[in-house]
Image (cartoon, rainbow, N blue to C red):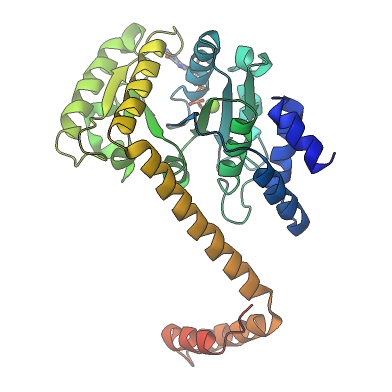
Length: 323
Ligand SMILES: Nc1nc2c(ncn2[C@@H]2O[C@H](COP(=O)(O)OP(=O)(O)OP(=O)(O)O)[C@@H](O)[C@H]2O)c(=O)[nH]1
Ligand SMILES: [Mg+2]
């Protein structure tokens, strides 16, 4: 399939073309990177979408929630793309395939598009191509992009840096203390959803919600004038789904009213440009065999304590072959 055909298919909202294009974007081959760049350049930038990150520990109910939210949004006339970023799964789509049972309706609905992350361990991490995939989904007419992450390593922070709104899912009971929360998560949270507020756990969930609300009072807000939202829901019983979406929309409106929606996206683009460029420079430098040999020699000297890491690095830099 040519780039033009791919682009036409995407513009027409064809999921098969979208899937192929994402595969192209995910490829590490130089020639594919060129084609991907060409494809992205030929597509119109659509900036009317809403990008939402959804994170939480395994088992919190992300997939159940996304199935419910996705179907709710489709009923409202939206087209929903789900991009899953899962550094814990060693094979491509390991967990999302198992997830198909939990996203049964969504995975077979033609207004939805679900895509697992590429195999972990690729250069630049699992989120390396998620941004480009997101742009492709938007060009294909998907106006709500949900990026799901289980939150291992840096993935939560990476996802938070590519979405408009970051939603964190919590289990009831975990609110007893804030110690269970990974450092830095609170600072990137826009909406906190305590899931499984049903049956025996409903009271616990409501209490957790209050506790988190109190804890957040002492934190510096991410955006001035925009409060973090808290709610307790049951993804399984589909309670609180529309309420959650209303909070997302309210959050997005507040961003827009304060001129922050566009500036956040611009800042994200700028830091993404920096990351891509730095990665590319490093790749180019390490392609040079002289650089490789010199680094190897210096490493051996460090092992024998013949040179300090600082001195070695200065020597490396001073004699570096530039691409
Ligand atoms: N009681 C109750 N159970 C829920 C709720 N949401 C999800 N579950 C259950 O919790 C389990 C895990 O749900 P998933 O949706 O697979 O959770 P996940 O966060 O996607 O998990 P990973 O993909 O492993 O990270 C399943 O057995 C769900 O049925 C809820 O609102 N209430
Ligand atoms: Mg899941």
